[in-house]
Structures are given as C-alpha cells and as structure tokens.
Image (cartoon, rainbow, N blue to C red; front, side, top):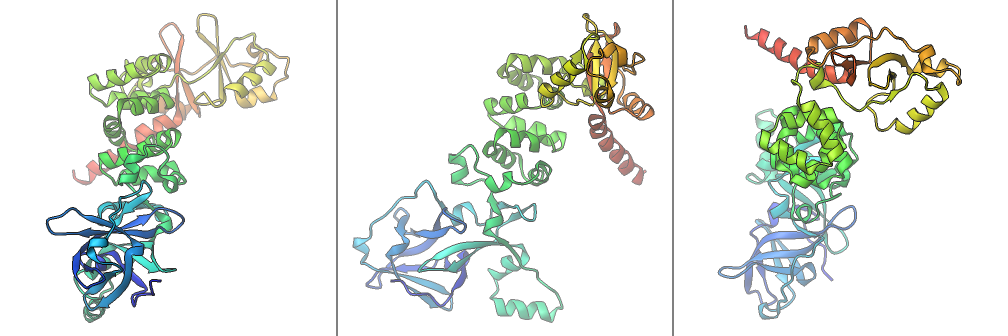
Length: 430
C-alpha cells in the first residue's frame, strides 16, 4: 500500500525530470510525463512515462511505485522491484499524457467562456493516488516554475503588486486538441457543446484555424453549424477550408441557403465549386442561385427558405401547412401569396391569419399593395424599406413580379452593423 506523500497537493512541473529509481536504488531514468485515465469527474494518474538515456521511453503502471520520497528539489520516485523485472505498458485509448497533451497548450475554460494557456497541472492525493483536479494559468503559475512560492510572495509584497492566481477546475476544462480528440472525430467536446453557440463562437475566434477545425470536427453537426454561423465571415471561410470536404459540405447543407452562399462566396472559386458538387443536389441548387447575386444586394442577402400559398387556400389549410413547415423556413411571420406563375400577388401576417375565420380564403384577407425590392437593390435601400414600413422581412421579386426570395431584418443588421463600426473607427483617425 502506497502511503500518502508529504505533498498532498502538488503540480505536474514539480515531478517532471525527477529521478526514478528501482527497489535497489539504481536509477531507471527520469520522469518525462504522467498519464491519466479519463474516467469520472477527476482523471486519476494511472501511469508514469520514464525517459531513459539511449532507450525508448518506458510506461509503467502507477501501482509499480513503492514510495514517493520528497526532497527540497521535488519528489524522487522509488519503484517496488528491480530494474530487470519492470514490465512496460502501453497507453490505452482512454488515457492521456499530461505533458504532451495539456501542459503549455490552450484549453477552453467553459465556466469563464474563454481560452487559457496551461502553465501547470494541479494534482491532489486521494486514496493511494493522485487525481487531476485543476489547471493553472496566468502569471503566478508561470513565475512559480522559476521562483519558489515564499520568495515569490516576498517579491510581490515588496513591490506592492498582486500576482493573481488563475485556477481552472478540471470539471470546467475542455482540451482543444489531444490524441483522444484526434482519435474520436465526433461528439468529443461534451462540456463545450453545453454552451450557447454564440459563446462557442467567441471561444473559436480566440483560436487558430486548425484549432477551430478540431473543435468543429468534434462537435455534433447541428451544434457546429450554429456556432460557425455566429462567427465573423473571415473565420467561417477559413474554418470551412480547413475541414475535410465531406464534413464541410455536410455543414453547408444544414445551413440556411443564404448563410451557405455567404461562406462559399468568400472562398476561392475552385474550392466553392468543389463543395457545391459534394452537397446534395437540391441544397446545392438553392445555394448556387444565390451565389449569382452581388454580396451587398437584396439578391445576395435573401434566402430561399420561405413558403408560398395560393389565393384560394383556406385559412385552416394555411395554418396546418405552417405547422408542418415551421422548422424549415426562415420566418413564418409573413405569408406570401403567389399565382400559378409564382408572381407575388399578396401578403398577410401571421396575426392576421390567426384572427381570420377558418373558412375564409387568403385572397379575402391579404394585402395586395406589397412592398418589394429587386435583386440588385443595394443593402441601404433594403434597410430603408424595412425601417420605413416597419417590416420583419422584405420580398425580393424579379422584373415580372415573380418571388425569388425574402430578406429578413436580422440578415440586414448582420451586414450593416460591421459596416457602421468600420466607418466609426475610420472617423477616429481622420
């Protein structure tokens, strides 16, 4: 039975490069890494990785330790058998080497909704072994590797400064890219997936393109799409290019056609065409139509995810159809009424539909003076029409009055707000 060492709470860096000796006191090597078993809330140290001069690294089970002897420089690990009787082991699929995968790497603090770089790993003695309980970040843990704790506190107090401690409990940690996440390409980031997509987007924008791609590869497709669409356009295009073609095309298929078109429009033509060919034909056709329009126009902003009704449709039938299609269209606030040639002949709001009698036909209650824009209308004209007439969405029609799409107010705001910020920022320096 391994007795409790003097240091009940310790850190990974205190163990690294410390001597490992066998039961006769002969040096086996130095500690290169600690391996944890990823079970439960707090992973337990399960193996030692020992560096040996001129030989391969040796992985030994934690149970091979007879004693942990504390010295001023750190622990010395004493094994329970002679060197020649040591039995090497291999890493299991659910084990992770801490130095190689965590130390000096970026991780996500899901509680703080931020990215931190790990300076050290905190371990706590529990039931004959050490559990991984927290990660240490910030200046205090970095300086702590160079200066012992007491001198560090004396220096801070002498200069009247505070060196904050940044401790991230392991239950809030999501490693970004490890050997485990590379092996499992789906549903790895369970803690991260519980955050709001906008928070995941903020976190992704702190990472480099390959790290962003690693996260999207590990998230469920729907969550990955929601998070990606919350990021800036340049981030979206960069990530899509980093993903495998199959994964990227699957994500584009789950997006609204206008969102997918915006991303493809920012990619090199050859890459955009490659992804379109990989998409399902129906989805690819909708996106390809939108790509024909200039970006900052009604045609470039519109979506084809809407539904139309015929003038003779009864109110009860329209309500039933809306219930069936509610999850597939951009907005159900307006109902667009078209003739057999797809010319827009009327519009009514969901409120007007709800107040009408079930046997009434749509042509009896629709508004025939419909506010519309052409596909080439600039974004400012679209915004002015939405504002002037207090609309949530604006239909886009061709020169013959055929309905081609709708522009929603949120899509206009997403494009206008960055433009306004850029103009304000430029004025500061003029």
